[in-house]
Length: 202
Image (spheres, rainbow, N blue to C red):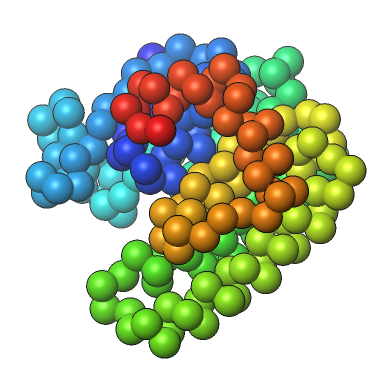
């Protein structure tokens, strides 16, 4: 059975949601960052993932898969009938990868200085302005759409869910009305509700 190594409030919520949306059997192993990145299984995270961070997905064959944008595509392909990603080899799949990379670099990593104790307030203010423009880009692309790909929820929406939550946690800023609507569509999904409950977060 697949095993997802995760931490509450971390970006591992994205593959966690994908696993539940795909209807794939899996186990969870919580990583406690306050206790030296110790897993609930009693191992240090670096013993499992030398990169030292989550998410990490342990496959049935013993292989370890890392990097969230890659993990969610792997999960989507485990159950194509769930339509969490366009088929491989299509141009729509390339568009999905485009979104995943945008979220990973411009939003996920773009937000990281806001959680740093070393970053001064002037720098954080500049980061907030930059990330706000990136969110505005997403908002513009959502015009007339329920999700990033129209009416179909994909793994890109699961990753955006994390980015929006991280933005709010880092800045305490409200999302725009359109982004709030988008967030509401995601958070009401049964798989998302179940993932949040399993991780003990709101």
